[in-house]
Amino acid sequence: MAFTIEVMDELMPTGEVKPVAALPNAGRGYDDVVVIVRVYNEAPVVGGVIAELIAAGLSVIAVDDASTDPSAEEIDKAGAFRVTHPINLGAGGALQTGIEAALRFTDARYIGCFDADGQHQLADLLGMIDVIRSGYDVVMGSRFLDGQTEMSWFRRAILKTAASLLNRGSGTKLTDAHNGLRLISRNVAAAINLSHAGMAYASELERVLTQPAFRVTEYPVHILYTDYSRSKGQPLLNSVNILAEIAAHRVSTWGRR
Amino acid sequence: MIIKWLLVPGVLLAVVTALQSRASLRGQARRKIFAVVTVVAGALAVLFPALLQHIADWVGVTRGTDLLVYGFALVIIYLVGSTSVRFREQEARIVLLARQVALAEAEARFTATPHAH
Image: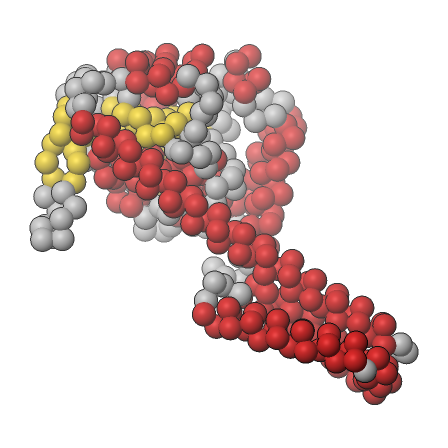
Protein backbone atom coordinates (compact mmCIF):
# COMPACT_ATOMS: atom_id res chain seq x y z
CA MET A 1 0.00 0.00 0.00
CA ALA A 2 1.26 3.44 -0.85
CA PHE A 3 1.73 6.17 1.68
CA THR A 4 0.20 9.34 0.38
CA ILE A 5 0.47 12.94 1.37
CA GLU A 6 -2.89 14.58 0.97
CA VAL A 7 -2.94 17.90 -0.78
CA MET A 8 -4.19 20.34 1.81
CA ASP A 9 -5.03 23.25 -0.42
CA GLU A 10 -8.21 25.14 0.21
CA LEU A 11 -8.49 25.76 -3.50
CA MET A 12 -8.83 22.01 -3.99
CA PRO A 13 -11.58 20.97 -1.61
CA THR A 14 -11.96 17.64 -3.38
CA GLY A 15 -9.04 16.41 -1.26
CA GLU A 16 -6.96 15.07 -4.10
CA VAL A 17 -4.52 12.38 -2.99
CA LYS A 18 -1.18 11.91 -4.63
CA PRO A 19 0.99 8.93 -3.78
CA VAL A 20 4.44 9.94 -2.57
CA ALA A 21 6.09 6.59 -2.29
CA ALA A 22 5.39 2.94 -1.92
CA LEU A 23 6.63 1.12 1.14
CA PRO A 24 8.70 -1.98 0.59
CA ASN A 25 6.67 -5.18 0.66
CA ALA A 26 3.55 -3.46 -0.52
CA GLY A 27 1.18 -5.51 -2.60
CA ARG A 28 1.53 -8.91 -1.02
CA GLY A 29 -2.01 -9.39 0.11
CA TYR A 30 -2.29 -6.95 3.00
CA ASP A 31 -2.51 -3.78 0.93
CA ASP A 32 -5.55 -2.64 2.80
CA VAL A 33 -4.05 -2.84 6.29
CA VAL A 34 -1.74 -0.51 8.17
CA VAL A 35 -0.44 -1.43 11.62
CA ILE A 36 0.26 1.13 14.32
CA VAL A 37 3.06 0.24 16.72
CA ARG A 38 3.53 2.46 19.75
CA VAL A 39 7.18 2.53 20.76
CA TYR A 40 8.53 3.85 24.02
CA ASN A 41 12.12 2.82 24.78
CA GLU A 42 11.88 -0.61 23.16
CA ALA A 43 15.14 -0.53 21.18
CA PRO A 44 16.17 -4.14 22.00
CA VAL A 45 13.03 -5.70 20.50
CA VAL A 46 11.15 -3.18 18.35
CA GLY A 47 13.27 -3.80 15.25
CA GLY A 48 12.41 -7.50 15.25
CA VAL A 49 8.70 -6.89 15.89
CA ILE A 50 8.39 -4.37 13.02
CA ALA A 51 10.55 -6.46 10.67
CA GLU A 52 8.25 -9.45 11.24
CA LEU A 53 5.14 -7.37 10.43
CA ILE A 54 6.73 -5.94 7.29
CA ALA A 55 7.98 -9.36 6.20
CA ALA A 56 4.37 -10.52 6.37
CA GLY A 57 3.43 -7.79 3.89
CA LEU A 58 1.95 -5.28 6.32
CA SER A 59 2.65 -1.55 6.30
CA VAL A 60 3.74 -0.21 9.66
CA ILE A 61 3.43 3.22 11.23
CA ALA A 62 5.63 3.35 14.33
CA VAL A 63 4.83 6.11 16.79
CA ASP A 64 7.99 6.82 18.72
CA ASP A 65 6.71 8.30 21.96
CA ALA A 66 9.81 10.41 22.64
CA SER A 67 12.01 7.43 23.36
CA THR A 68 15.35 8.22 24.96
CA ASP A 69 17.06 5.09 23.63
CA PRO A 70 17.93 4.27 19.97
CA SER A 71 14.36 3.08 19.24
CA ALA A 72 14.02 5.60 16.38
CA GLU A 73 17.02 4.16 14.53
CA GLU A 74 15.70 0.62 15.02
CA ILE A 75 12.35 1.70 13.57
CA ASP A 76 13.98 3.29 10.52
CA LYS A 77 16.21 0.25 9.99
CA ALA A 78 13.21 -2.07 10.16
CA GLY A 79 11.45 -0.03 7.47
CA ALA A 80 8.44 1.46 9.22
CA PHE A 81 7.01 4.94 8.67
CA ARG A 82 8.17 6.71 11.81
CA VAL A 83 6.31 9.50 13.61
CA THR A 84 8.27 10.83 16.57
CA HIS A 85 6.63 12.76 19.39
CA PRO A 86 8.72 15.72 20.59
CA ILE A 87 7.55 14.95 24.14
CA ASN A 88 6.14 11.81 25.75
CA LEU A 89 2.36 11.68 25.33
CA GLY A 90 1.61 8.27 26.84
CA ALA A 91 -0.12 5.25 25.36
CA GLY A 92 -3.37 7.00 24.48
CA GLY A 93 -1.60 9.99 22.95
CA ALA A 94 0.57 7.73 20.81
CA LEU A 95 -2.42 5.69 19.64
CA GLN A 96 -4.26 8.85 18.59
CA THR A 97 -1.18 10.06 16.70
CA GLY A 98 -0.91 6.71 14.95
CA ILE A 99 -4.56 6.79 13.93
CA GLU A 100 -4.26 10.35 12.59
CA ALA A 101 -1.10 9.41 10.70
CA ALA A 102 -2.84 6.37 9.22
CA LEU A 103 -5.82 8.45 8.10
CA ARG A 104 -3.63 11.23 6.72
CA PHE A 105 -0.80 9.34 5.04
CA THR A 106 -2.39 6.07 3.97
CA ASP A 107 -5.51 4.86 2.23
CA ALA A 108 -5.75 1.73 4.36
CA ARG A 109 -9.20 0.28 4.92
CA TYR A 110 -8.19 -1.36 8.17
CA ILE A 111 -5.98 -0.05 10.96
CA GLY A 112 -4.41 -2.41 13.47
CA CYS A 113 -2.67 -1.80 16.79
CA PHE A 114 0.23 -3.97 17.83
CA ASP A 115 2.51 -3.79 20.88
CA ALA A 116 6.19 -3.09 20.32
CA ASP A 117 7.44 -5.31 23.13
CA GLY A 118 6.83 -8.59 21.34
CA GLN A 119 3.99 -9.86 23.49
CA HIS A 120 1.54 -9.93 20.58
CA GLN A 121 1.72 -12.56 17.89
CA LEU A 122 1.60 -11.96 14.15
CA ALA A 123 -0.63 -14.99 13.62
CA ASP A 124 -3.30 -13.47 15.86
CA LEU A 125 -3.25 -10.21 13.89
CA LEU A 126 -3.49 -12.02 10.55
CA GLY A 127 -6.43 -14.01 11.90
CA MET A 128 -8.10 -10.78 12.99
CA ILE A 129 -7.59 -9.33 9.48
CA ASP A 130 -9.46 -12.31 8.03
CA VAL A 131 -12.29 -11.70 10.50
CA ILE A 132 -12.62 -7.96 9.85
CA ARG A 133 -12.60 -8.56 6.08
CA SER A 134 -15.59 -10.84 6.53
CA GLY A 135 -17.64 -7.77 7.44
CA TYR A 136 -16.84 -6.21 10.80
CA ASP A 137 -15.87 -2.69 11.86
CA VAL A 138 -13.99 -3.59 15.01
CA VAL A 139 -12.12 -6.75 16.00
CA MET A 140 -10.80 -6.74 19.57
CA GLY A 141 -8.21 -9.18 20.79
CA SER A 142 -9.19 -10.88 24.01
CA ARG A 143 -7.07 -12.89 26.39
CA PHE A 144 -10.07 -14.44 28.07
CA LEU A 145 -11.84 -16.22 25.25
CA ASP A 146 -9.68 -19.29 25.78
CA GLY A 147 -7.32 -20.27 28.53
CA GLN A 148 -4.07 -20.08 26.62
CA THR A 149 -2.68 -16.89 28.15
CA GLU A 150 -1.05 -17.45 31.48
CA MET A 151 -1.38 -14.65 33.98
CA SER A 152 -1.56 -14.31 37.72
CA TRP A 153 -4.97 -14.46 39.40
CA PHE A 154 -4.44 -10.87 40.61
CA ARG A 155 -3.86 -9.46 37.13
CA ARG A 156 -6.79 -11.51 35.87
CA ALA A 157 -9.03 -10.15 38.63
CA ILE A 158 -7.98 -6.54 37.97
CA LEU A 159 -8.51 -6.83 34.23
CA LYS A 160 -11.88 -8.53 34.67
CA THR A 161 -12.99 -5.80 37.07
CA ALA A 162 -11.82 -3.11 34.68
CA ALA A 163 -13.67 -4.75 31.82
CA SER A 164 -16.92 -5.00 33.76
CA LEU A 165 -16.62 -1.37 34.92
CA LEU A 166 -16.10 -0.24 31.35
CA ASN A 167 -18.83 -2.40 29.94
CA ARG A 168 -21.58 -0.88 31.97
CA GLY A 169 -23.91 0.91 29.62
CA SER A 170 -22.18 0.14 26.37
CA GLY A 171 -23.85 -1.93 23.72
CA THR A 172 -21.30 -4.67 23.19
CA LYS A 173 -19.85 -6.58 26.10
CA LEU A 174 -16.11 -6.97 25.87
CA THR A 175 -14.24 -9.54 27.90
CA ASP A 176 -10.87 -7.83 27.75
CA ALA A 177 -10.78 -4.04 27.58
CA HIS A 178 -7.07 -3.56 28.09
CA ASN A 179 -5.72 -5.64 25.28
CA GLY A 180 -3.50 -3.64 22.94
CA LEU A 181 -4.22 -5.88 19.96
CA ARG A 182 -7.07 -4.25 18.07
CA LEU A 183 -8.17 -3.93 14.47
CA ILE A 184 -10.59 -1.24 13.31
CA SER A 185 -11.93 -0.07 10.00
CA ARG A 186 -11.17 3.35 8.59
CA ASN A 187 -14.56 4.88 9.34
CA VAL A 188 -14.27 3.79 12.98
CA ALA A 189 -10.78 5.28 13.21
CA ALA A 190 -12.13 8.60 11.99
CA ALA A 191 -14.55 8.60 14.93
CA ILE A 192 -11.79 8.21 17.51
CA ASN A 193 -10.56 11.31 19.29
CA LEU A 194 -8.72 10.32 22.46
CA SER A 195 -8.12 13.11 24.93
CA HIS A 196 -6.78 10.99 27.77
CA ALA A 197 -3.02 10.89 27.72
CA GLY A 198 -2.55 8.14 30.29
CA MET A 199 -3.67 4.53 30.42
CA ALA A 200 -7.30 5.52 30.97
CA TYR A 201 -7.58 6.03 27.22
CA ALA A 202 -8.87 2.45 27.08
CA SER A 203 -12.18 3.42 28.65
CA GLU A 204 -12.56 6.31 26.23
CA LEU A 205 -11.64 4.12 23.29
CA GLU A 206 -14.03 1.35 24.30
CA ARG A 207 -16.91 3.80 24.46
CA VAL A 208 -16.25 4.79 20.83
CA LEU A 209 -15.64 1.27 19.58
CA THR A 210 -18.73 -0.28 21.14
CA GLN A 211 -21.21 2.15 19.62
CA PRO A 212 -24.26 0.24 18.43
CA ALA A 213 -23.62 1.44 14.87
CA PHE A 214 -20.39 -0.58 14.64
CA ARG A 215 -20.20 -4.32 14.12
CA VAL A 216 -17.87 -5.43 16.89
CA THR A 217 -16.44 -8.85 17.60
CA GLU A 218 -13.70 -10.36 19.68
CA TYR A 219 -10.92 -12.67 18.63
CA PRO A 220 -8.99 -14.95 20.97
CA VAL A 221 -5.36 -13.89 21.19
CA HIS A 222 -2.47 -15.25 23.16
CA ILE A 223 -0.14 -12.93 24.98
CA LEU A 224 3.43 -13.98 25.54
CA TYR A 225 4.55 -12.64 28.88
CA THR A 226 8.24 -12.92 28.14
CA ASP A 227 10.90 -11.88 30.59
CA TYR A 228 11.40 -8.76 28.51
CA SER A 229 7.75 -7.71 28.44
CA ARG A 230 7.45 -8.60 32.12
CA SER A 231 10.34 -6.33 33.01
CA LYS A 232 9.11 -3.58 30.70
CA GLY A 233 5.39 -4.03 30.82
CA GLN A 234 2.84 -2.92 33.31
CA PRO A 235 3.70 -4.07 36.76
CA LEU A 236 0.79 -5.15 38.90
CA LEU A 237 0.72 -1.83 40.72
CA ASN A 238 0.04 -0.10 37.43
CA SER A 239 -3.15 -2.14 37.18
CA VAL A 240 -4.23 -0.32 40.31
CA ASN A 241 -3.45 2.97 38.54
CA ILE A 242 -5.65 1.91 35.65
CA LEU A 243 -8.51 1.04 37.98
CA ALA A 244 -8.18 4.35 39.82
CA GLU A 245 -8.12 6.30 36.54
CA ILE A 246 -11.21 4.51 35.30
CA ALA A 247 -13.01 5.10 38.59
CA ALA A 248 -12.11 8.80 38.47
CA HIS A 249 -13.22 8.96 34.84
CA ARG A 250 -16.50 7.26 35.75
CA VAL A 251 -17.14 9.79 38.52
CA SER A 252 -16.19 12.85 36.50
CA THR A 253 -18.26 11.87 33.48
CA TRP A 254 -21.16 10.58 35.54
CA GLY A 255 -24.47 11.75 34.17
CA ARG A 256 -22.91 13.24 31.07
CA ARG A 257 -23.49 10.31 28.79
CA MET B 1 -27.31 31.78 61.93
CA ILE B 2 -26.65 33.63 58.73
CA ILE B 3 -23.16 32.14 58.28
CA LYS B 4 -24.61 28.71 57.51
CA TRP B 5 -26.64 30.23 54.71
CA LEU B 6 -23.48 31.87 53.39
CA LEU B 7 -20.97 29.03 53.72
CA VAL B 8 -22.91 26.11 52.26
CA PRO B 9 -23.88 27.91 49.02
CA GLY B 10 -20.41 29.47 49.10
CA VAL B 11 -18.69 26.08 48.96
CA LEU B 12 -20.99 24.89 46.20
CA LEU B 13 -20.44 28.09 44.24
CA ALA B 14 -16.68 27.84 44.70
CA VAL B 15 -16.62 24.27 43.36
CA VAL B 16 -18.96 24.94 40.43
CA THR B 17 -17.30 28.17 39.29
CA ALA B 18 -13.86 26.64 39.71
CA LEU B 19 -14.70 23.65 37.50
CA GLN B 20 -16.31 25.91 34.92
CA SER B 21 -13.47 28.40 34.77
CA ARG B 22 -12.37 27.82 31.22
CA ALA B 23 -9.90 30.27 29.81
CA SER B 24 -12.77 32.43 28.63
CA LEU B 25 -12.92 36.21 28.64
CA ARG B 26 -15.70 36.06 31.20
CA GLY B 27 -13.53 33.91 33.47
CA GLN B 28 -10.64 36.31 33.12
CA ALA B 29 -12.87 39.28 33.93
CA ARG B 30 -14.29 37.44 36.93
CA ARG B 31 -10.79 36.79 38.22
CA LYS B 32 -9.84 40.47 37.85
CA ILE B 33 -12.92 41.63 39.71
CA PHE B 34 -12.12 39.07 42.38
CA ALA B 35 -8.57 40.42 42.70
CA VAL B 36 -9.75 44.03 43.08
CA VAL B 37 -12.35 43.04 45.68
CA THR B 38 -9.68 41.12 47.60
CA VAL B 39 -7.34 44.15 47.66
CA VAL B 40 -10.10 46.51 48.78
CA ALA B 41 -11.36 44.10 51.43
CA GLY B 42 -7.81 43.56 52.70
CA ALA B 43 -7.18 47.29 52.93
CA LEU B 44 -10.47 47.85 54.76
CA ALA B 45 -9.73 45.02 57.19
CA VAL B 46 -6.35 46.59 57.99
CA LEU B 47 -7.67 50.16 58.29
CA PHE B 48 -10.73 49.24 60.34
CA PRO B 49 -9.85 46.13 62.41
CA ALA B 50 -13.18 46.29 64.21
CA LEU B 51 -15.06 45.95 60.93
CA LEU B 52 -14.30 42.23 60.55
CA GLN B 53 -15.59 41.61 64.09
CA HIS B 54 -18.76 43.56 63.35
CA ILE B 55 -19.42 41.44 60.27
CA ALA B 56 -18.63 38.28 62.25
CA ASP B 57 -21.10 39.26 64.97
CA TRP B 58 -23.73 40.05 62.34
CA VAL B 59 -23.46 36.69 60.52
CA GLY B 60 -23.16 34.73 63.77
CA VAL B 61 -19.48 33.82 63.95
CA THR B 62 -17.69 34.17 67.30
CA ARG B 63 -14.54 35.89 66.11
CA GLY B 64 -13.55 37.94 63.10
CA THR B 65 -10.54 35.65 62.69
CA ASP B 66 -12.84 32.65 62.27
CA LEU B 67 -14.71 34.49 59.53
CA LEU B 68 -11.39 35.11 57.81
CA VAL B 69 -10.54 31.40 58.03
CA TYR B 70 -13.90 30.47 56.47
CA GLY B 71 -13.27 32.90 53.63
CA PHE B 72 -9.78 31.52 53.22
CA ALA B 73 -11.10 27.96 52.97
CA LEU B 74 -13.52 28.99 50.21
CA VAL B 75 -10.74 30.67 48.26
CA ILE B 76 -8.50 27.60 48.54
CA ILE B 77 -11.30 25.29 47.35
CA TYR B 78 -11.84 27.57 44.36
CA LEU B 79 -8.12 27.75 43.63
CA VAL B 80 -7.54 23.99 43.76
CA GLY B 81 -10.46 23.36 41.43
CA SER B 82 -9.70 26.07 38.89
CA THR B 83 -5.98 25.30 38.87
CA SER B 84 -6.58 21.63 38.12
CA VAL B 85 -9.02 22.50 35.34
CA ARG B 86 -6.60 24.98 33.80
CA PHE B 87 -3.79 22.46 34.15
CA ARG B 88 -5.77 19.80 32.33
CA GLU B 89 -6.74 22.20 29.54
CA GLN B 90 -3.12 23.20 29.14
CA GLU B 91 -2.08 19.56 28.99
CA ALA B 92 -4.66 18.77 26.32
CA ARG B 93 -3.42 21.68 24.22
CA ILE B 94 0.19 20.54 24.54
CA VAL B 95 -0.80 17.05 23.41
CA LEU B 96 -2.45 18.44 20.27
CA LEU B 97 0.53 20.67 19.56
CA ALA B 98 3.06 17.86 20.03
CA ARG B 99 1.02 15.59 17.76
CA GLN B 100 0.92 18.17 14.97
CA VAL B 101 4.66 18.75 15.31
CA ALA B 102 5.28 14.99 15.10
CA LEU B 103 3.05 14.53 12.05
CA ALA B 104 4.51 17.56 10.27
CA GLU B 105 8.05 16.36 10.94
CA ALA B 106 7.26 12.86 9.67
CA GLU B 107 5.58 14.27 6.58
CA ALA B 108 8.52 16.55 5.82
CA ARG B 109 11.06 13.76 6.35
CA PHE B 110 9.10 11.30 4.24
CA THR B 111 8.57 13.78 1.41
CA ALA B 112 12.26 14.72 1.41
CA THR B 113 13.56 11.14 1.23
CA PRO B 114 10.68 9.06 -0.06
CA HIS B 115 12.75 5.95 -0.69
CA ALA B 116 15.09 6.10 2.27
CA HIS B 117 13.04 3.69 4.31
